[in-house]
Amino acid sequence: MKIGFIGLGNMGAPMAANLAKAGHEVTGFDMADVSVDGVTIATSGPEAAKGADVVITMLPNGQILRDVAAELIPAMTKGATLVDCSTVDVESARAVADQAQAAGILAVDAPVSGGVGGATGGTLTFMAGGSEDAFAKAAPLFEIMGQKAVHCGEAGAGQAAKICNNMILGVTMIATCEAFALADKLGLDRQKMFDVVSTSSGYSWTMNAYCPAPGVGPQSPADNAYQPGFAADLMLKDLRLSQQAAEAADADTPMGQMARDLYAKFVESEDGAGMDFSAMLPRFEKRSRT
Ligand code: NAD
Image (cartoon, rainbow, N blue to C red; front, side):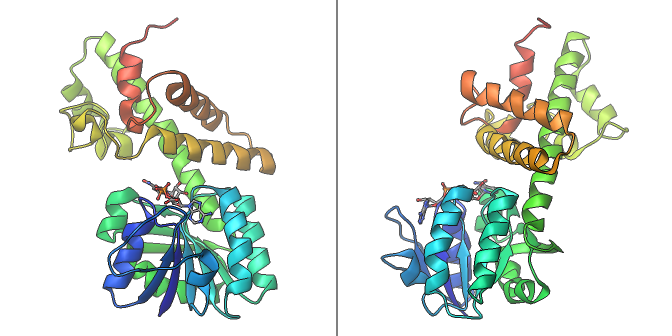
């Protein structure tokens, strides 16, 4: 396939490289000066999109996606497919899909889970929204860049799934960290706490697979001085998107709201910026009740 790839950052570059390695003809563009193995670099987004069967975007946020899509769509061939893999607000995903449809372009919103490690190893999970036809066009590429793709529904459904998942993740990480901090103050050994909770009804992915306590459970960013992994800043972005969506849909999400506020404080006025999102544990450790 002829593929255009716009946004060759931490995630986009290895994803584009994997597509090229699999034998596709990939032309990429990024605002920054980049080079990616096997990828021809174009001088603009529209140049990379011209004549492509599929155009993939991997960009920082919804406003940038809207701006970039407005330039790309008129340059694309009718019947081609636009696949946005960025994490953006549901409204932007739907607006871009509408614009694409009006121009005879198929559109898929397909945010990912798995981080830079998953992008490099080709083991991402894709959560996709869009028509059956659009999903079918993108599916072979998801297979190269990832290990799983779930077609979640119509336009915006992929973004909806992503922010709901990450709202659970943020809330659960906070709950796991505050429980460890309480256990410490009660004199409970962390390993014993892990042994009980990881096999009891308090188990979760954050406890069992990504334990925030160093030296306990499987290897995780806690064992590497809380270097990300999944940065607290990115968790904050996703929690903000979840609350933006909750407001728009009039959904009551008190725990998600609290998690957003706590990560905002952690990243913006404490020392959480650039740390893994599990560094909530040392944050709680240092604090008292007041
Ligand atoms: P990044 O900042 O490394 O990459 C974004 C790239 O987009 C940059 O290289 C930037 O120069 C480029 N860009 C910005 N505006 C542009 C424009 N107008 N035209 C062309 N290129 C432009 O970010 P990332 O970590 O690669 O994340 C990309 C997306 O994936 C985000 O939406 C993020 O939320 C999501 N995501 C990231 C991770 C992760 O672990 N990094 C995990 C899951 C999802």
